[in-house]
Image: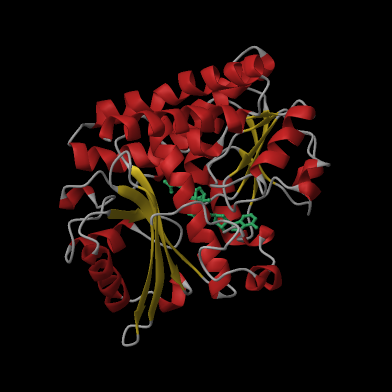
Length: 366
Ligand code: NAD
């Protein structure tokens, strides 16, 4: 959901697909339409040099098709670099289904979507994202093997969100080590924005460690539910970016680090689960650096989920999932140090490692 950076009028002036500002040499973009089930979806395959393009399916009530296209282009690109920096033999892909997951998601629609995924013969492998549940993946599995994140009862690795949160927690600790000299989060003031599947599991890790956790969400019921379960405070204000805090953890939408929020942010560390947190990677990466805010790149620290679903493809066990996810701590610390040495943004430092791996593989494959 990168709606904040989308100006539909501007988008409409561009060439419909290849001229989009988020188009980044994507290999294939598939538009899926099925009148009977009401399915309207777009599958974006960004890059398959490292392996089949894997990435979740997001169902969201986009304002228009331009927003959906922009989202799938940005998200699929992010998956390429996430898999590469994590050292997985996967390319980057993503799918979006246009519609309200609460009211428009039906078994027929999901099955039809699965058939479209199947028609790509494994070039794209789907998984869960916003608006999807493990049960949806189980349903898709009945029409195609090219799906991960299926339930443990059906032989899968289950809901990836707790592992994603654990990886974010590891990345946050590494960033804290770098910024504060210690990775102990006890008494650190942490604002978690978005307490959905990942946000809740992150809150659990944080409160177990004794951090002072503030939670924000557009869903009041959810806020109260989480407050009753953990030792956290509901943020009651209307502009959390301006609050005094040690760590800001974006776990809802993308693009929350932008011109408006950056001038107010007092956090010393940013580490969260949301994809595409920087509205403009280059510009806002530089602004973070100039302000001395340690930014743990999103696509690096939110890779726990992809590690979890990759386990299904490679048949590795829970122990190995945890080991790989804990390694996010070491990689994050290394990236933060490299960024300082090379005087680049932390986002760029992570990106350079990923690109280096993709280029090396391309050379080897040729
Ligand atoms: P989710 O749908 O379970 O939770 C999102 C939460 O954000 C919801 O509680 C929603 O009410 C809240 N929200 C929406 N708009 C908001 C706003 N403007 N302000 C505050 N809260 C708002 O999603 P999730 O699975 O927890 O994923 C969260 C983020 O992490 C997403 O950006 C997702 O792409 C990313 N991510 C998730 C995984 C995973 O394993 N689930 C993996 C990698 C990245």
